[in-house]
Length: 216
Image (cartoon, rainbow, N blue to C red; front, top):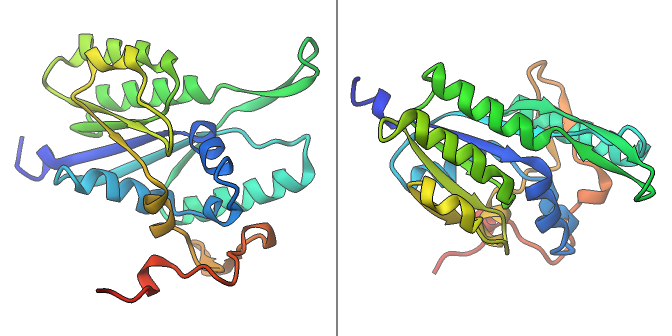
């Protein structure tokens, strides 16, 4: 294995595990973020080269406005090089609401299959779901020390305790990490046509992007 190969890193994101902590900040403009940029900030701390970002999500087809925003968000992520894996929603009659399905499974399957296919040397799993401890355990059993796995907690959440015996370290995203990755009003896709930011994600007048803030 060459030195360059030894630095390959991939990030696997449970979309709703990231979305809800951002939503809880009550600043909707933070939802318009560049997942590749966020991932790169994570892996560069270890000196690795980002080769893949996988975003596992589910478009809420039962909510037209949310559906359209979500599809726009997905399009711009794909334009940035992010792989999108979609689950679905089902109506839970007992709970009286729609619930998201399959994202956590997609995360686990893609992470493990990519390891088998030698896509990366180091994987980062962004999720606060303790069910992913099973993913980490199977990863460690199969690959031992030949590949590394890090746990990444969404903002204001903790890395699952059950995952700790099977990972090589843990990180936490912060609000500052999200702010640095907020995108512009117009982003461009593969066809060079602009992708317009949804009105709901427009930043307030008082907010200044970190890249435009004066340095000390």
